[in-house]
Image 1 (spheres, protein in one colour):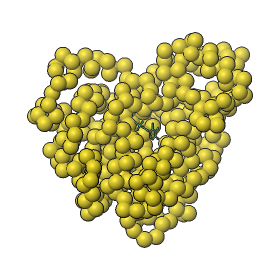
Image 2 (cartoon, protein in one colour):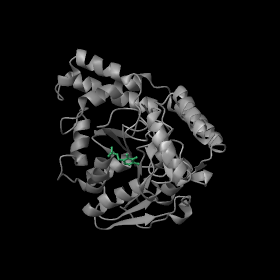
Image 3 (cartoon, helix red, strand yellow):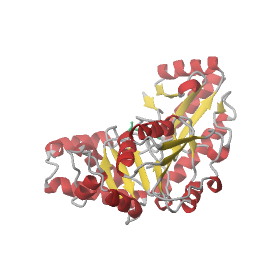
Length: 352
Ligand SMILES: *Cc1c(COP(=O)(O)O)cnc(C)c1O
C-alpha cells in the first residue's frame, strides 16, 4: 500500500534501517540524562537548524505532538487574549483547545477561498497571541510567507504563532516572520508519529520567562531550562529523536525540497485539468503546496476511493461535509516520483 494520506503519512524509505541501527546500538534503552542522549539531542537540533534554516537565535524544543504544542502555547505564552484565524478543522481545534484553557481566546473564521489581508489584521495593545495555521491540512489551503510577514509587521506588540504541521520539512519557511512555530513529525517530515518540534523566537522565550508559568510538566520555563542542557523535563521519545537525527543528516536543503514539491504541485494541477476531477480550492493564491484536495461528483469520488484501496493506494479522506465529494493527496517529500506516476496512471484509468 502506498500512502498518500496527509498524516500519518508515508515515511522516508530510510527510516526502518535507522530503527534497526537504533536497536543494534542500544539506543532504545539509553537514559535520557546520559551523555549519549545529550549528544544525540544536540546533534538533532543542530542538523534541524541547518537543514530547515532555522535562525541561530531561535530555540528548538522537543514535544510529543502538535496538539500538545497548542496547549503549551495557551498555558505558557498567553495570559488571556489570543486571536485565532482559521478556515478549517485544525485551526478551529487549536482555537477550541485554547479556549478551554483561556476563555478570552477569540476565534476569527474565514472562508477557505479567502486570502488573509494583513492590512485588516491589526490588533492594538500588547501581550496577545495571533494564531495562524500556515497549512490547513483539512482543506488544502495555505497562508503564504508574505502574508505572515505582513501580519507580524502590523502587530509588533503581540506574538505570532504558526501551526506548520503539514509544511515543516517541505516548505522553506521564513522563521523570522513569526515567534512560535510547531509541527508534529508524521506529516511533511516523513517520520513515524509520536513527536513534535516547537520553535521559539527570542521574543517568545522572553515572554515565557516573564510570565514564568510553572504549573504543568511541559510548562515552557521547565522545557527551556532543560533544553539549556539539551534535555526535556520528562522522558522523551528518544527513538524518534534518534531517527530524526539520522534522517536530518541525509535530507537535501529545504530550498531544494521546496522546489521539488512546487514542481510536483504543478504536475498535479496539470493532471487535474484532464481528469474529470477539479481542485477543491479555486483560488490559486491560497492553494496548499503540500496537501492537494480533489473534488468530483459523489459517485465518481466514491468509486475512486474504493478502487484506490484495491490498487494499493491509500488516499486521504475529505474532511467533514467534504467527505463525500473530495479526497486529499499528500504532496510530501517522502513520496517518490515513481509513486506519483503510478497514482496518476491509476486516476487516469478511472476517468477514461
Ligand atoms: C495533524 C495536524 C495537527 C495535529 O497533530 P498531532 O500530532 O496529532 O497533534 C495539528 N495541526 C495541523 C495543521 C495538522 O495537520
